[in-house]
Image (cartoon, rainbow, N blue to C red):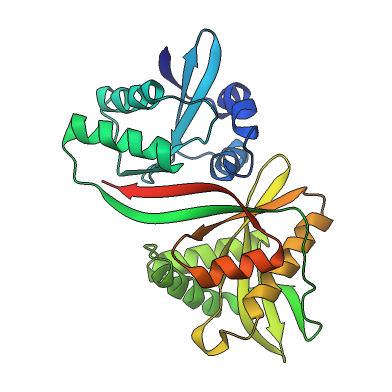
Length: 277
């Protein structure tokens, strides 16, 4: 068994894409980041495991973020322990790890053995997929692209979103994210009664799907169906553009958001857990 790196994103995709596409929605994070790295170069570490001439596992990091472990069939304990040993021997920075529960737990136990690190669960997540939108968005509202004039509002909402989602997004990062979302025309707003009331963002794209994130409704507009309408309308828009499915992550411990997505037509395809070291 060989655990190693490649520095080329194109070479890495050629090696691991078939493996990741077997569970495309579950691996939307890795696939989406790799798709972005093809056109927007950034620091990254691209690892894979080869056995008997076949690629059997993949893992990666875009520093300073957590390492991502692939969701792959038939991955065994030895492979995951070998990845942990490899990262330790290479003296790599490992601020945390995320991926399927079972795989991550094996990695974490080996990492604790190697480093005596203190570990904590940051979030337990579900991964959802949608193939068909099952509800019709309200005719009383409209899905619109976020515009430059909306930047202050969006930056504030992204900051609040970070606080609600237990994600570390400071004011400066929120402003930069808002500017990028507007520039890329990925952020959509739900407008009702001539007022912006909710938002949802198209984040990553894979070979057959697109992911949605940054779904947020401020307190004064909650419990009115605005997030449901925004996500349903954006999901339908993505399907109409030719994507075969949409995917998204949710907090396992948030029954409200999970209920919303299920009503729209999303169904669970995977589980994920995030550990911080």
